[in-house]
Amino acid sequence: MTETATPTIAPTPPASCPQQAEHAQTPALSIEGVNHAYGARRALIDVSFAVAPASFTALLGLNGAGKSTLFSLVTRLFGIQRGHISIFGHDIGAAPSEALRLLGVVFQPRTLDLDLSVRQNLLYHAALHGIARREADARSREVLARIALSDRAGSKVRDLSGGQMRRLEIARALLHRPRLLLLDEATVGLDVKARADILRHVRDLVSEQGIGVLWATHLFDEILATDDLVVLHEGRVLARGEVARVVADAGAVDVNGAFATLTVATERSRSAAP
Amino acid sequence: MSVTTAGPAQSGFSFGEYLTCLNGIVWREALRFLHQRERFVSALVRPLVWLFIFAAGFRQVLGISIIPPYETYILYEVYIAPGLMAMIQLFNGMQSSLSMVYDREMGNMRTLLVSPLPRWYLLFCKLLAGTAVSLLQVYAFLLIAWFWDIAPPPIGYLTVLPALVLSGLMLGALGMLISSGIKQLENFAGVMNFVIFPMFFASSALYPLWRVQEGSPMLYYVCDFNPFTHAVELVRFALYGKMNWVSLAVVVGCTLVFMIGAIYAYDPSRGFSRRGPAGGET
Image (cartoon, each protein chain N blue to C red):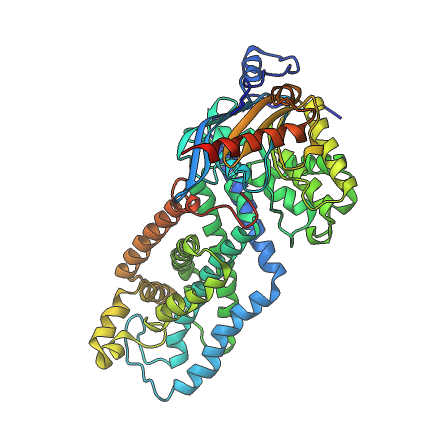
């Protein structure tokens, strides 16, 4: 199995105090030796990688690779069977509240309440994070303006388009000002323009707000050469590191080729095994 | 765009944060209830059908002797009113569990469960929200029943409130526990057949237990063991400003057992994680 080194921590915005500086040096997300099984079926096998603060890390894998299971473990929807997951140094099992405070997440299925309005969905999320009503109102207005949905604040969510719903989910995930954002196949089912808009918006969050992003996808064209990349296949990490380095190590010319090389090599080695 | 950076995560939550979370969950439950007007109507129609049709038919068949908390002979309608109040809460508790299963299938449940507040607290808030909705329904029923000459002493409307909160919590916690074990929405019909109807009919809601004992001693023990019987009796006594201590103990005990069971079942390292990801996810 080809495996490059853990990505280096990307430069972060200047910290204003020693405590914040220490915070900035800790990986946004650290996953070490994580294993998960559904009965006899092993969904994740010894998965380890890290996401640096203020970086965009693509988690590339086909359907069935284990991406959603990994997200369920990071968000504590599932209990960790083996291994450790921490968010900015807070272990998700031992200190879930501290870890989840720093985490924003957009799941693969829509998790908005379709019968509530756009604003009501945001206020509900804010309440779940203990954000007082006045502050929640102000933040809702701010995020709605940022995603150009201010004029739809009173509309029922079921009346929004797919792209608008996704933008709203991202805005909702940012409402409590997390430092790490997880997005699981956030562009699935969207048209080309909506996909591009959402991807650009998320990349802006990295560069402008210093948020660490883990972007799970199976679409090669969503990954840039400057991104960090984790290739997940059948529950195993096949490669991790900067995209250019992963591609070079695989002897390929692009991500597509690198992915094909890595997965074919894995399948060959498995079929050759006794 | 302004740069927003958060500092290191705080430890613990303030009282205000806990209260904000509770308000948010109750507010959302109330909004959903108001949006589903047919749910409110059906929640009222069900007990009213029992009161106006069933009770009118059975009034001549089922004589009620003087039993506590009543101090005189009463009409059958008066006897079954507390049972119907508890029935509203029973159905509401199961409706809440149905909505939790629906939320889980639709993905909304994740929004709740990834909140940084303690999961036991989130589930407790959900339970309180469901109970608050059931109180609205019960008082609407009492208002209509008052026009039908079913009028407990005025103080009873106040003294019954804590009993309704307790019975609402118990039945809501039971619904929550059941919802943790239901994998698909389609399986919920089984809850109607195996939980709601047996609990309701094997209780003192429609007939006093001494009547049941005359007919079947075995069924009497089943009814006496049924927590719903004690919810009914707690409400019945409280409606007349009296206390049934045995029922209080059973309802409080069952609430704790069901609640602990639900928290255990929704713990990520136990119940909730045994299921795989939703369809299409891996």
